[in-house]
Image (tube, rainbow, N blue to C red; front, side):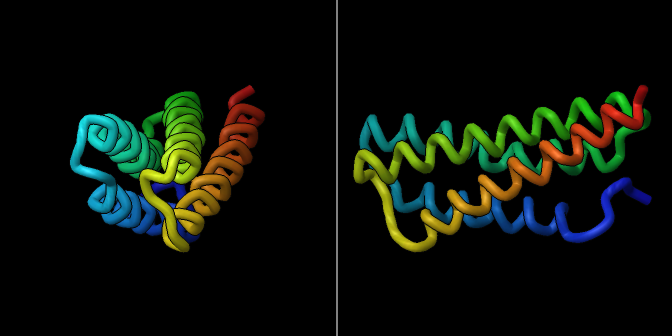
Amino acid sequence: MGRFQGDLLERTFQFAIQIVRIVDRLPNDAKGWVFAKQVLRSGTSLGTNVREADQAPSEADFAHKCSIARKEAAETQYWLELCRAVDLVGGVDVDQAIQEADELTRILASIVKTAQRNKY
């Protein structure tokens, strides 16, 4: 049994799917490839780190993996905002992904804070 209660595992999985679909719409040129690589990497690794945290053998490892996931969520938000700002991709789905990245960052920050407090 994992550590997470609620829907965080599913939310990060759905977020990764959303990221893949957004990346598919980026331009097929050098600039688009760079952005695609960055967004795809950070946006999908968020969920993998949450899954790893869910199975962490210790509270310290759990906090560490959640901290990495939080950083990936924040990085993904940055790349999506930059994509939108330079008109590489836009739309309601991008705005929703930016909002979800922000929410996931906040949720994970709270989890890390609680886990670190429980560790000591």
